[in-house]
Length: 182
Image (cartoon, rainbow, N blue to C red; front, side):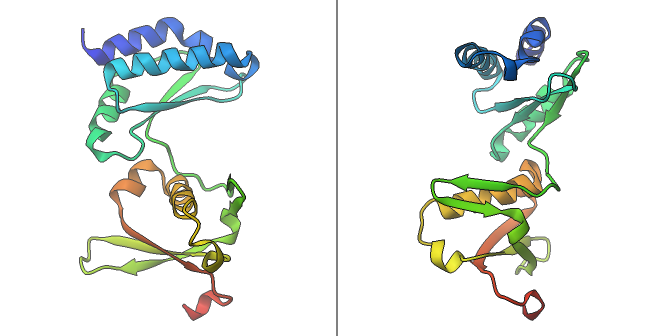
């Protein structure tokens, strides 16, 4: 039996325990999540997951390589082998979102409604780049936590695979008052 099939056999036998993660105590939840990660790492120790949804909806198990392209094929292989499990959907990679959101790291809070971007042309016509205009970036750019937070926001907007494969470069600049003047 392949490692992929072993993972799915284990998940199929244990999926019910993950349906109500939001309604169990923290230590039981941590134990379940650790167990899921251990079984996933038996398949490939470079993969991670996101799991959940509301209990009255179909649950999702997202398998992610955390943007590491060297392991994208392992994500795709695992999801391709996924069985049908009633009430569950299995998703390769963190998917893009169109919904606005806010993110916070320490004292820094950013809202996707407040940032905008323009495409950039590279030396190679097959490369896509973007310049992201961030309010008050000139005041926060020296904060070591700022760029990783911004990159995580862009990854959330673009989706894991597109962020890693399609975007060749990303620049950040302080937002100007007139986007038409760019």
